[in-house]
Image 1 (cartoon, each protein chain N blue to C red):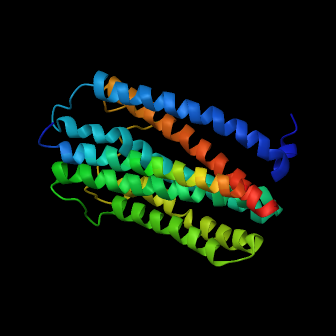
Image 2: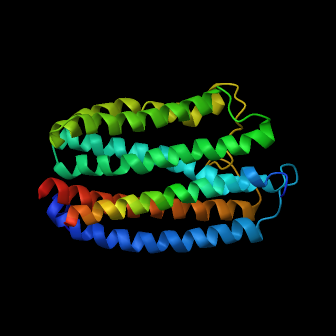
Image 3: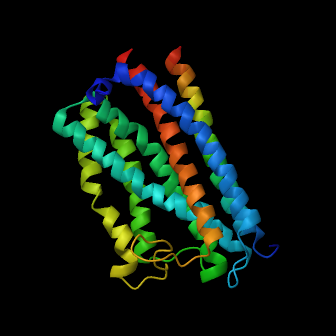
Length: 35
Length: 231
């Protein structure tokens, strides 16, 4: 795992960060649309 | 049930809220199950070692990138043919998530490629056509953002989405039509899977999780669009 940790965790970290960011931006847009 | 009842944005709005909640919960549960199977049940790959576990997000993300585009193009075509407001809204709501999954497929593929192929990127048919898909999504989003009138933006975007759909079979068959560094399909409807059953289970659970996630965020986004346009 140690040899390839960067590639494996780099994939998972960026994926879940992007999905989380999409949810955060969407919640912000939802609040603005309701205001 | 009269499905045409839900063709109106106002009547679809509450239904979209219920779908978003159900799919959001399903996505979280399926992702937890998929990651558990992928990391704790599926064995280490004999040739690639642990780095193969990138496939649990790379393959489902690549599937979603193509599937969302097809659904987006279908909504766009419906909007052009029947001039229904909800169709354009659905196509608009799908594009950002489709672009996101296309980027994830390219990013994770690149990080998997470096240790297994020895390079982050090659201009082979599969990778290049997937990159074109990302540009199609970004072009669709930019085109719609550039036009003030939402109905005109929907029609312009629909044309681009429909023309761009020709890229989907090119991506899918690129590994068959051309001699690519990217390997052939891991899972096919026409033949038995070439991966171990636990690996396949993890991959399918993650694919269902991404599917449920996509539906949930699209429903939340289409509710925002309905509120913004119909206010």
